[in-house]
Structure formats: C-alpha cells, structure tokens
Length: 250
Image (cartoon, rainbow, N blue to C red; front, side, top):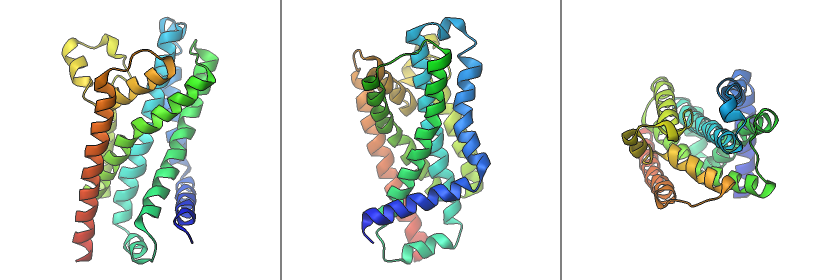
C-alpha cells in the first residue's frame, strides 16, 4: 500500500476505535454545544449582538478543537505507549508518517464534527452571522490555530503515563480555555491578565479565527505567536518521540 493508503487506513481504524466508546464521542460533541446553550444563549446582551455572538461561537469552536486535540493526542498516545500493540506497529514496514497523519486526520475529523453543533446552535439561537466565504476562511484559520494543541497533546502523551496524562490534559485544557478568553471574553480581563493572555496559543487561535470570520486588522502578535507555538511544540514533540523510542527499543 502507498503512504496515502496507509494513512487512510490508520485514520479509519482510529475513528472506529473511538466510536467503540460512545461516551467519548458524546462528550466531545456535546460539551461545546452545551456551553453555548448555557452560557451564551441566555445572555441576551451577547446573544442578540451580532458581533459578540459571532465571537462567542468562534471561541467555543476553538475550545472544541482544542479539547479534541489535547485528548485525542495526549490520552491516545499515552495509552498506546502502554500497550504491546504499539511497539509491534513500529516494527512493520510502514512509514511512521502514515500513523501520525492518520491520527491527525481522525482527530481533526472529530474536531470538525464537534464544532458543527456549535455553529448550528449559534445560527439558530443567536444573532451570530457570517458569509459562507468567511466561514470557510474561519475553518482554515481554525485548522492552522489547532496545530499547537495537537503538538502539545503529543508532548503530553510521549512524556508521561496515561493516568498522569488524563489529569495534565484536563488542567492544561481548562487553563488555556480560561486565560485564552474562550469562556470569558478578553474585553473583561484586567490589563495584566490581558497581557499574559496574548502569549497563550488559545488566545492567539481565537483572535486568528475571529479575524478570518469578521475581518479587521490582524495584530502581529497573533500570527507570530501561532507560528512560534507551532514550531516550538513541534520540535519538543519530535524530541520526546525520539527519546521515547530510544528508551523502549534499546
């Protein structure tokens, strides 16, 4: 099989394995949508304002992709490292890139599925609005902004056992969500908190997607931050992967 065929096969079976645990799918799909229903829709000041409502939908979409990336990579990698099946897969005559891309595509598919309920509920129950072109641009920005979260998940998965990874992923996810302005708009932050928030990948992803959907000026700290976090976390994930491989196969 070609690398493309192996990638599709890995992605397919990753999705099948995830689907065998329905609660994992339900929590990934339901939590961001429930957050919109409970925290945005009842607030008429936000829900009836097109600007605020659209930004709220964007923020929860970023949260949906972030949580799927952290859990999908962090927990999956940590659990696989503890199973004999994972070392066996590494001995097969197939490129490692096929497994990595398979995981990226399967986790990305779940992330896209998680934002669909948020978009639908936002369109039905709030004043959020955007043209089809801006929605597509927002999806592209969301994919770019999700890269650091995927690599952070890989770093967690390759650096600790699954029991520790569960706790660390939850702490990292909610910390980035709150300080990144995904639950509370940065407009309400204190100046010192807003300054710190701008250095987080969640805030940078949020601002990047908002710019893609609503237009305006893209501040340099947004795209520079996304690029820096992507490169740094990718380099760290690669280092931890090589260290893990050396520890288990020497």
